[in-house]
Image (cartoon, one colour):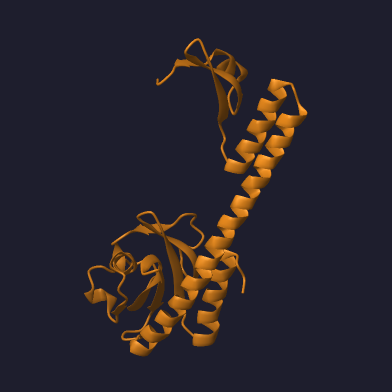
Length: 219
């Protein structure tokens, strides 16, 4: 029921571990051409910020690239396998899809040979389908919140423009709102004068940089 992505992924991991008694489970989501570890039980890299594997790399990367699940009941015989946990002998990886497009992978691992069968595959595929709906709803909600926040920012900037005749004040407030909303460290307003661009105000720059910057149009 939660629309927060981290909570959704945490609930998925907890459900898989507690109700279905799997012991090594990870959720990885695609970000560009990287499969990023987002939530896990007993994954040694969960504390490593941004830990990822490349698309097509390892069993999970292969599943993300092809969109097909994989059961590997003896990882020592599969050249694709990338050892991260010690003593792992079996692996099951299932794609998470939205509109038939892979967005991530569920990954189960076991220290026993031949741990996974088609019942496990069926169960994890069903969970992946449900998870994809929850993730999609979370993404939609996040987009709506961002849109509403930006609309609110635009309204606030409009109020400032209409309430002040001081251009410097308008510029400063505009930059403050813009940098906060867009999460930029550097932001500037450039004005055209005599066919050149001059910096009128900025955030993240030194006073000298703002006062001395100029450039030809198109440069």
